[in-house]
Length: 167
Image 1: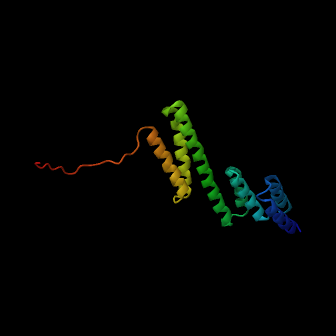
Image 2: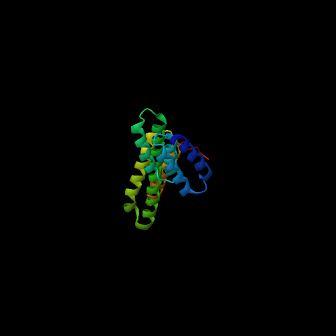
């Protein structure tokens, strides 16, 4: 009976999913309350929080599920994805903070935010070394830092041989 009610609430959720966040969240929670073992509701709830930039809460929901269902690989994959998103989100925050501090207070006070941004992007890249978005943001932060600090990498020209001829 509770599975049928949970499915009924899942159908209702689909109708309000992109229209009314409060009602959607209420249906999700009601579905979980009625059937605590209905995994799609938990995963959908985690997706909701991740979509609204609350990656830490989404990870927490899935970590609890992982304890109950350790062999369900979809949970592990989603946790990894959310951790990547969380680290990119943190990196973006520190990147913006670095630029703000550099403009308002100077180079020395902005270095801590730069280092924290680098660390966050590196954590994302450790989880997924092929993540194009994390790579791009990581490289942009380094490039911005080098440009602002006057250390931008300018292509070097090397003269290998010089020959003078009479004119």
